[in-house]
Length: 188
Image (cartoon, rainbow, N blue to C red):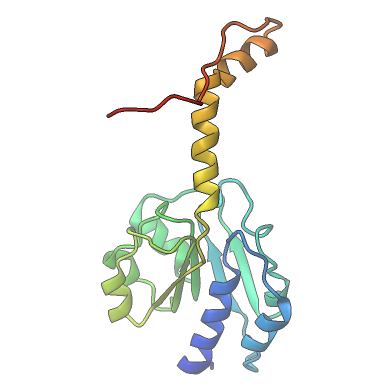
C-alpha cells in the first residue's frame, strides 16, 4: 500500500506528464515514481477527441508504474461518469470538457489526483476536491498558441482565405480581393 506522501510524490510526477505542449525528461519522472509498490496506478485521460494525449508528452516513464486508459468519447451523465472513473486513482481532464462537481467526486473513493490541462479549470469543484483529499494539479500554460491562432483567424477573415480556398477546391478561381491589415483598426 502506497502512503499518502508517496502517492503525492507520484501525483506530482503524473501532473508533469499530463497532456501538455511540453516534453519532459523521463529520468526525472522515474525518480518521482520510484515508490516500490507492485500495484500500478490507474490513470484515466478523459475527452481526448483528437487522440493526441499520448503523443503530447513522453509517457514511457510511467509504463511499468501506471496503467493508462484514454477515453476519446465524452460522458455527460454523472452516474455513467462515476461508473467509468471508479477504478482510477488519477484523472487527467482536458480543460472544461468534463465537469467534476462535488456529487461526482464524492463517489470516487480511489481518486487521489486530478490533472488538468491549462492553469485553471472552472468545471472542477476545487473545494470538494480539497475536502476529499484529492489534489488538483495543472499543466503549464503557454499563451502563444492562442494568440497565434487569433491572428491567423483575423488574417484569414480579412483575406477571405476560407472562401478563396473553397473556390479553388471547387475548380474555381479567385473570387475577391482581400483587405489589407495595415492602416486598419477596429472600433467598438
